[in-house]
Amino acid sequence: MVGMVADLAADAAHEAAENVGVDDYESLCAGFRWHVPDRFNIAEVCGTRWARETPQAVAIHFEHENGERRSFTYAELERESRRLAAALRRLGVGRGDRVAIVMPQRFETAVAYLATFRLGAVAMPLSMLFGPEALQFRIVDSGVRIALVDETGIDNLLAVRAACPWLSRVVAAGGAEGRGDLDWRQALAQADVDPPTNPAPTHADDAAILIYTSGTTGPPKGTLIPHRALIGNLPGFVCSQNWFPQPDAVFWSPADWAWTGGLMDALLPTLYFGREIVAYQGRFTPEVAFSLIERYRVTHSFLFPTALKAMMKAVPEPRSRYRLDLRAVMSAGEAVGDAVFAWCRDHLGVVVNEMFGQTEINYIVGNCAARWPARPGSMGRPYPGHRVAVLDDAGRECPPGTPGDVALHRRDRYGDLDPIFFLGYWKRDDATAAKFTGDPDDSWCRTGDTATMDQDGYLWYQGRSDDVFKSAGYRIGPSEIENCLVKHAAVANAAVVPKPDAERGALVKAYVVLAAGHAGTPALVAELKAHVRARLAPYEYPKEIEFIDALPMTTTGKVQRRVLRVQEEARAARRPDEKTPTGG
Image 1 (cartoon, rainbow, N blue to C red):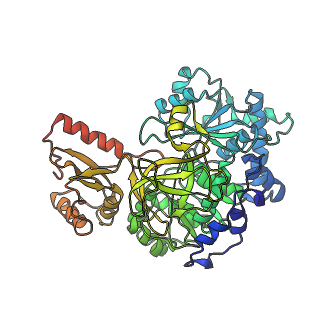
Image 2 (image 1 turned 180 degrees about the vertical axis):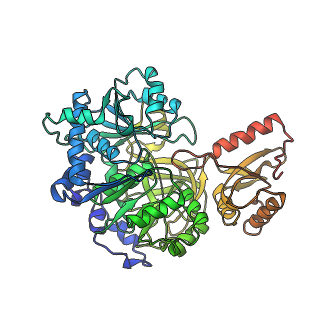
Image 3 (image 1 turned 90 degrees about the horizontal axis):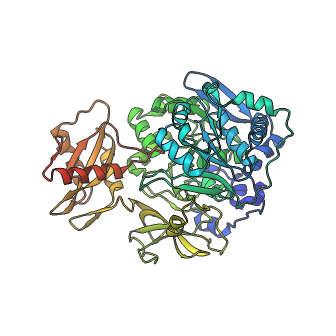
């Protein structure tokens, strides 16, 4: 099966990292062709086949913040997913039914996904961080019938249970046992008498996952992902992890397995290659991150820019305190910026590979330091198999250096269909149609993210299309200014938004989270303004700075600039002459 689904993924597994510094990009793209079988099931390729071939290999290292630790093999993963699939079948789950999974990184979460795929049902990940309203909206909108939940989400789920008319059973796991309709262990014990459940003979185009967008630009939409999308992810995963897998590869990421980044960029591709992944159930801190990397000898990781910034500020010289075996770090969600890029290179010992994608079309652009040079500040080049362009409002490709909307074509350079595409938005045909430009079979999918592409095909991120604004006629992308601010020792994180202004249209305003040991004084405001003015264009420095304890973030680690922008608009409407006490 490995050889069938992606030539690059299969062949690249045998390459080594000594290729750093070369540029094999064009030859990789020219030699890549998609191979998508008609029948394809994620449970088969991520679980069943490894239970046959390497049953005693470790699949998941689990660690709880309370100190509990245990490792699980591929044989155990297969056995438990078969038992859960039988239990779900007893509860009436069949092909196409949605199963909500409200659990963090833990062994049972991986079991739940594979069991759901095994039945041909649709897994619907729900973050343990969701409050009652967020849970209710998604459960009702999707028509979920069964929910699998542990102690991290049971309270909020039960709070909205009565308002979810189609939710017939709650299966409680871990510390939630005794509070649902059926306990996890009880359900699996009852299923032991049932015949084994082999993976359903699903088509590659059949739905596997219903995952809701993070809502950075509006109400969340359910994005329906097919089994084949995992195939579409493989070139990007292999490249961004500097030729994953390697025989001793161990993967860890703090990314929640309820989100595309944790599920499609970490858990499933690691299991696809039959390697080890660390599941940590607990709060992220820089010290925890470094301890996990050291303890499990983690070789590959996906770390959000916000996580990397926190690690950089808290532990500037990690190799003096920790043993690090890292060979690759992928980062996505926001621009990394050259300050974090340099720290990763100099102090983690790896060139960070930025990646770009979204729930609908994940892992389409990125870097691969092992096979082509990464350029600091660039989000990379289109990964092999993906035809990417920057489009203007009329759907024309922009000249090099001209900002536009990043878009992915349905077909690759050879005219073959790209398997990475989502099936559509759940019950939102209008929104699905609006996502594409051109004939349905020969169209571009717009991302809503603004970037430029240079002569060599590298893309340079400017921000969400609705995050880019004009000030005194100049086009302002927040990422460059935020990156510049973070280079200052006093700044832990920053977000730049427009503040309405009658004369200029908008002023550049920065919200700044201070690093430990620094105070938000008028002198620091002046210092930060001068810091940016000395490094960027005169029109880019923030005319106003406001210090804030924490930036509003989505549960996927992205800054919600929209929240801050709306706040500024409300302030302007309420008091046109309002000044902030920290830096008007």
